[in-house]
Image (cartoon, rainbow, N blue to C red):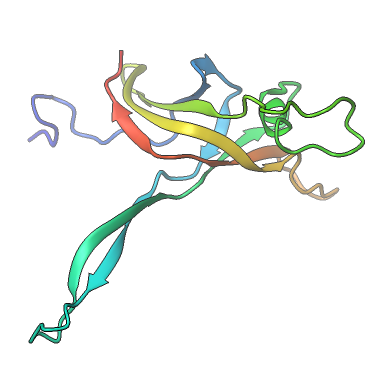
Amino acid sequence: MPRFVESTKRDPYRNFNFRVLFNNIEVAACRKISGLTGTVEVVKFRSGNSQSTVDELSPGRVHYEPITLEAGLTQDTTFRDWALQLIRHEATPGFRAAEPDYRRTVEILVYDLDFNRAVKKFVLRNAWVSKFTAMSELAAEANEIAIESLEVQHEGFTLEPVA
């Protein structure tokens, strides 16, 4: 029996086949993306004349956790260029723009491994870099890939139809 409505597919999508786009441009292949999380704050309320000892609960503001993007360190400068729009050192030549265009629309496309087509599209709105790791730890005895990473703040995500 299929687990998907109107489908012969039985298995869920795998988490290792995805692509990332910044402003509709595919970026260097990421090896890992942290999960997308949205949380609704709980507002407790109790009126002064209430006979109940139980608080009334109402939904409050929505909070979105930042995501982390990790990619192997290459000659591609996409991560660095975006991060340096806000992270500047006094030794960096030139001045930071008065109003840098640092916000991006980030799209995460999840692919179906069986048919190699996008099946889910998550869009993060008004995303910007709050932390940039230019290079992971180096160790002479290690046998690992050098990694660069971005911590990205955003103002929410949506699941949109795949074109």
